[in-house]
Image 1 (spheres, rainbow, N blue to C red):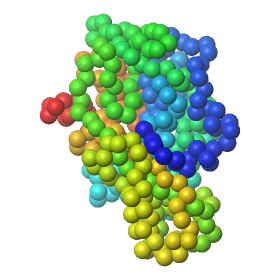
Image 2: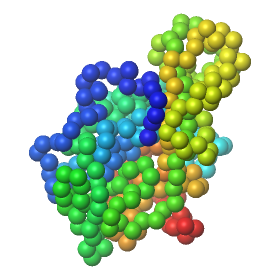
Image 3: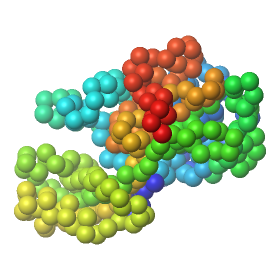
Length: 339
């Protein structure tokens, strides 16, 4: 989830704001080929990949508005090379595939996703306003419903038979749970360890001044010349508040690098709660013991970055029956063995 006042909603058009809260889609297919539970970036990117992959009926349900979780407060940076030498090679490889997948999606989707190019240390990277990307993805999907909470499942012969929601029952052929943290639903036995890691974000006021290169190394210049800073790793802080002392410390670091920033000042301050597994790697896998259910969870700091490749891989797996090799390292069994 996100608390405080993120900059992203204020950059949207009225149409884009409306696409984030569509309400209950009509007509609503109660027996879709694909049901996706979760309206963050992983859920909508998976839905888009399924639509592009030829699935006949794709339905997305979200209990709140789209992007109400960590997706709506993230930085939206699509920068695989920032993870090189920091994260495991398999995650970096997935991120590189995902940047390519984002570019393909931006070119192919009816309204694009609002992708913006960045040149960072000689590498062609990118970024998005995460809410704009979500809104435009949603606008091109056939069936997205908000205000619909999944509450339980029933299974039969190793398959999910029904998904119970706040608006009644669905009987999907396949289900993807893209709920940030692993789903906790009645009738679904899935004890995967996970938690949330809080991170603060700062966006400056507009400015026409150009920051020095040393400041750009720790902050990104976005629209109106604003500096985007963050996010922090506030381990052990679970309170749903923005802490001014953390924001002040973040901005003081920028001022130390660029004294003129003192006159620019902070325009937006917020915090989001990143879903994470103990090893800080995602799960992209089939739900154990269920042949028609998958989950993608715990993407930590790379959810938006890796969403396009994750969604594409899940759609391919479900369509073909074969797990794509790029997501094999992110199996759920590694966590169940130590739970």
